[in-house]
Length: 107
Image (tube, rainbow, N blue to C red; front, side, top):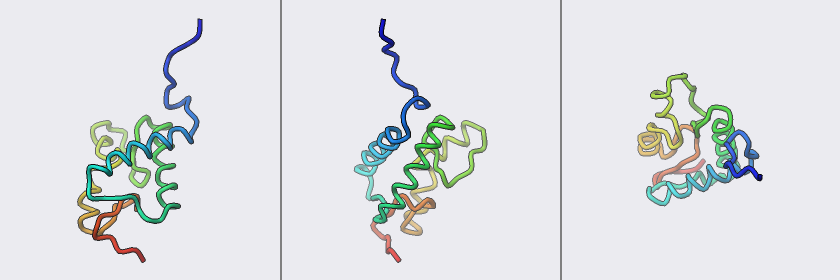
């Protein structure tokens, strides 16, 4: 009998997890005034970091923040983290440089 159990994140290729992360974040962006950083290489690098964290740590944690090991605390840094809105509103860009706001000025 064929095993029909869905793949766990650990069994998925990195590229597939990256696609899933990107799709989820693209959907989230449709409900915000934000967008991805216009630098495509930055976006690719940060999404890869999030995907690696998902595979290794079990969730889409911000790759620019340190995991504490406390699930309640670490839930604050699942991308988009709880800090990103204030960072984007104050600086035009989040700490990781993944998301930018309408006030973002490159350069």
